[in-house]
Length: 372
Ligand SMILES: *Cc1c(COP(=O)(O)O)cnc(C)c1O
Image (tube, rainbow, N blue to C red; front, side, top):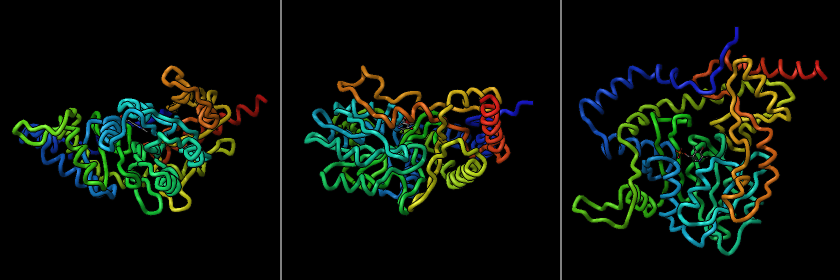
C-alpha cells in the first residue's frame, strides 16, 4: 500500500488546536464580536515583538504589504535602488517596484542566500537600501550585510517571511535591520487562517509611520489624517489565532529541527543537503530543500510513491525578462532552480513519515544505479 506523505497538513495541526480554537472563536466572534484593531491585535503585537526581540511590532494584512509599508516608512521611492536577491518569492522584488524604486538583483552564495560580495559589487550612487531574505528559515550573513550597509550608509530592510524564530549569534530573524516583515500565510512557520503579516522595528519613527500607513494615515477619530494611507490592517480575529499559535511556535520549530536531523541521517549520499546551523546559527527549516542533479526524475518518482514534494523555484524571478529593464545573469540562482527540491517539512510530520520519504529517495537512487 502507498503511504501518502503530505507536504503540508493543516487539518492535523488545526485538529490538535481544536478545543482552544473553538473557545477562541466563541469568545472573539460570538461573545465580543471584536473584528478590527481590538485588544487581541495589541496583545499579539506585544508578544510578537518580544518573540522577535524588537521594541515594536505592527500587524499588517500580509508580508507583501509589510514590505511596501516599510519601504515607504523608510522614505524609499523613485530614483532609489534597493539591492535584493532573485532567489526569493516575487513579493520581495514587487514591493520595491511598488514604491517606485528600482530593484537590483544579486546572486546567492554557497548557502543559497544573498551573497554579500555580490551586494558590494552592485552598489551604485543610487543605492539606498539592502533587502536580505532569510530564505528557508536560515538567516543571511547579517554581520557582513550590516557592515556593508553601515560603511556605505545604506538602510537594511529584512524580508523575514521565512525567518521567524531563526537565530544568528543569539539574535532572531527580523531584528538585524532597520525594519523587517513577516508573513502569516498559512504555510509559513507561523500561519494564520488566511493572510496576515507583521512589521518589526526598534525605530519609533518607522513604527509610527507604519501604524499610520496601515490605517489610512488616520491620526484620530476626528477625521485628522497625517497623509494618504492604506487599509492594510491585520484582522483582530487573525491576530487572536496567531496569539494562540505563537505559544506553540517554539515547540513547532524544535520539531522541524528534529525532523531535519532525521533527513540528515537517512538521506543517501547522492543528495546534497541544505546547510544546518554552524557558527552561531539556529535554523528553523521553513522548507527542507535538497539538491539533486536528477531533480525532476526524483520528484516524479516520489510523486508516484505517494510523497508530495514542491519545486518552489522552477526559475529565478529575473528570468521573467519582461519585468526588468536590464538582463541579469545570475548563474548560481539559475543552477539552483534546476536542482532544488523541497521535501515534506512541517511540525505535524511523524518520524516514520520522514523515514518513508528517505526510503523512497534511496530506492530511487538504487533503481537509477541498476539501470546504469
Ligand atoms: C511568503 C513570502 C512573502 C509574501 O508573504 P505574504 O504574507 O503572502 O504577502 C514574501 N517573501 C518571502 C520570502 C515569502 O516567503
